[in-house]
Image (tube, rainbow, N blue to C red; front, top):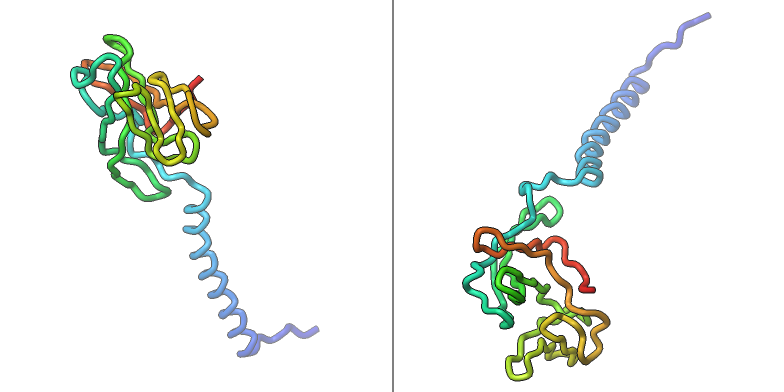
Length: 163
């Protein structure tokens, strides 16, 4: 029996295939990590302080503009956004998502009619967020809110549909 001899050609083919495999593995590992693992959140909490309670008046909605940091994939984004706050009692605040539940348009508070109005498609909402007119399919979405030490905090990461 004779042992097979390695030719120069078979050595080069083996080496080229080995190097190609190593390059493929080197590219596949970071790709798999990117696609399969979620980035770690840098914030321990999603609650954001957006205003002082003393700035609000009972029964008078106020649009509050604030800066929010959020994770967009692997990128950390700081953006300016808003929320509508309504102080219902002395130490109780309801926070509404500023987007109409019909098509996501920005609505406003009309003090003369005491209602939230969407100028684009005619949806109208009462001060408690319920639909009073228009094509909106549901009440305004609410952000979880709390009052702590005279400051109003909201959690804009998890808007909830109003009941």
